[in-house]
Image (tube, rainbow, N blue to C red; front, side, top):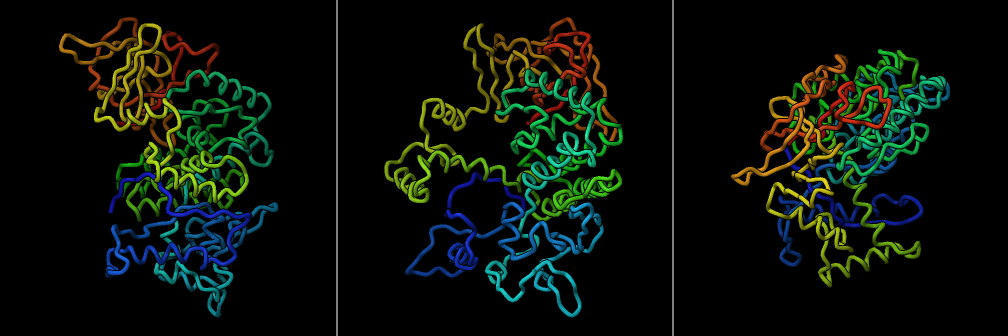
Length: 496
C-alpha cells in the first residue's frame, strides 16, 4: 500500500550520554503502546483508545539500526543488513565486493548467528532476546536503509573526499581542484530560492551538510566535474545520481514503476562493483546502496520518502526549546506543556511560531490558493509562488521548463485583460543532451541550452512544467543568462 509521507511529531524522547544499556526497558513502553493502539487489538473499556496506530518501519542511521536489531555494527565482517556475505580487510579498510550474495529475509533472521551449519556472525549474541522480534516486527525489511546517511553522508561524501584528499582513491591534481573551486564559486550566483544553503568550497567537502550533499548529487555533479574527471570516472559517479533518480530521488509523493526499480538495482549494483575496478574500496555505505531498491519495492514509496531528512530537520524543534545545557529533558517537557496549555501558534511540524515572518509563511501554506502572485513594485522581483517552487522575473529564479519542452527565461510577469497571469520571456533555440551516459540526459528534461532568442514572447502560467536550476558551462565571468555566447546546463527542480 502506498502512503504519502506525513510530518513528524513527537511521541517520546530520550536524553543521556550514551545509548540505554537495557534495550527492552528502553523500547518496551513504546511497543506496548503500539500493541494497545493496533486496530486488531480489542478495546479495553477501562483504557479506551481514541485512535489506532501500527509500526510500519524504523528509520535510523546504521549504528542505531545495529543497536536496535542486536546485530554487528558497520565495522563488522558480517554487518550487511540485507545480504549474507563476509567482508574483507584491504589496506586496513573493510570492503564488501559481492552484490550477488544471498539476500537476508525476515523469516530466517533468528538463524543469522554462528551455529553448527553457519559461520554467519550477524547476530553476535543470539541468546539475548530482542523486543522488536518478540513484538513480531520484520527484523530485516522493517529497518529502512536511510538514504541520508547511506547515500549522501556515506557513498557520495566518500567519493568527494577521495577526489579532494585521498591519493589512493582518485585524488585530483592541484590544477583540477583549483578549477572545481572556481566553478563552485561562480555557481553561488546561481542558487535559486528553493535551496537555503550554498555549496561551500570543495576543500571543505568533509563538512558538507546532508542537504548540501543532496543538492550536489542531483544538480552539481555534471557541471562541477565535466571536463575535469576522466570520462569513465564521471560516468561512474553519475551512476549514483541515476540510480537515485530512478528510485524517485527528491520526490516524495510518486509511486515508482517496477521497471524503474529493476533498472535502479542494476545501476546501483554496477556502481558498487565498479568501485573495485577503479581501485577504490567498496565500503559498507557504498555496498548498502545496492540494497536501496528493496525498500522502494517493499513500501511502494520513492526512496527519499523513506529517508531521515524530515526527522533531522525536525530536530530544530529541540534546538528551539533548549536555552542551556542544563536539564534538557525538563526544558523540552516544559515547552511542550506551555504549548498545549496556552495554545501557542505552531507550524505544521509543531514548532512554536516566534516571529511575524514565520507566521506569514505558515499562513501562506495554509491558504486555499494553490498559486500566489507577488508584486512589490519595480524595485523588487515579481514572484509566482507555486506549491513546490517559486518563479520570478530575475535570475536565477526565472528559468522555466514548459510542458512542450521549451526552456524560457522569464523577464516579466503580467496580467491580461481577463485578469489571467502570463509570463513574458525569451526562449533558448538550441537544446541538446549534455551527456549520453550513463543515461540520456534529455529523457529526464536535462539539457545543454544555448542561443537564447533576441525576441520576447508570452506564455500562460499553465504551460509551466517545472523550474530549472541553471549553471553556466565553463564560466569565465559572473553568470549572465542573456549572454548569447554562453552555454548553460539546465536541470529541472520540481515537477508539478
